[in-house]
Image 1 (cartoon, one colour):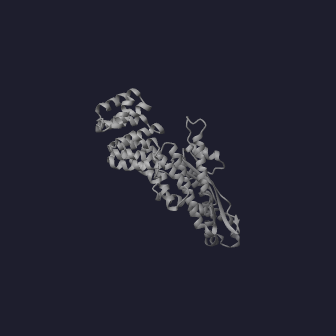
Image 2: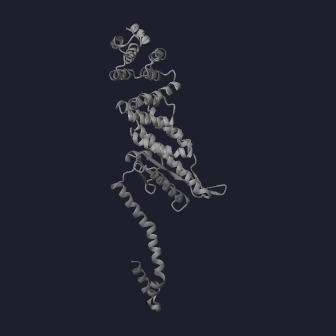
Image 3: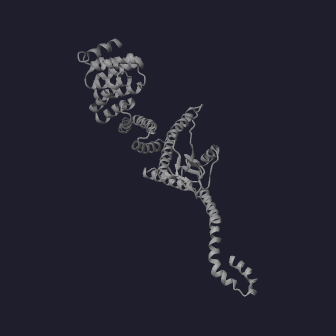
Length: 421
């Protein structure tokens, strides 16, 4: 078409005797065609490619749960910085083996959000875990004659709601938690002269905050294993960097480990309980819950000796705790130190049984009696039932203890049981 147009123009000049066609084909066409098709590539083909990309996302959507939608100038520094930050983010996720849990789609060339409401509407529509959106400042900005790009990023994420939480206290706590952690990562600018270092800092900040947000929100949505996996990977990164975000990550890891440990107890899977109690203690070596339940797990798995070591450590740390007192008393019975066991049961009259799951403890003691035929187990279950449980059950266990126990061997326990009956 362009050649035909040129022919028409040139035909009017044939009378001049100049062969314009030859001149154009020889001299102008090599210049005109690249200019014409170059303009066509920049505008037309760019829009065509964008159109088909939108169609592909709409009709053949890939599975992703994190979206990027950041405004920048492709031809300026901000475009170069953004591409490097995005590459770094994807590379870190791949290195951490998190690509199966966190799948990122970059929508920066398709969707840009002007406010939080737009971003939240899109997040809900696509059921995304997180949208990272915002903009780079203009590439012409300077500080002290140095070119600088500041990045204003927003994070739109899932805030779970629960029917039982009518005042949305949990939701507000999640938001407050995340805001406080974002405040720890407050470097979001790139100065041209130090762009390599600044891009790395911003990439790390973006990665750490994104992982924290996703790990936290997944935890409250019940996806505990995925939450744990993300937090553990983030924990490894933060330990290496001695990063102050680590305390927040450890807090939530202990929460998740505790839930898994309790699940192990309920399933009588003490290997599982031990595994997660050990994980808790690796973070918090004096964690009372972990010590007490590790003692039980060690007893079920490895027997008395390992359990005794854990119980003695707990007693030194928590000498007036009811759960610890019950554990210590049980171990003393296994050691045949009946007077000491009675002392720890007697301490409960002063300390109370706060935090003790009484029915589970009594059931455990009855099971142990069936296994060991140790009369002191009957005394223990009868003692606890008498003061805090079923008095009739207490009488049955204490009478059976008196029938089976050697009065001289269990002297103090024997006398105490007679008083209770």
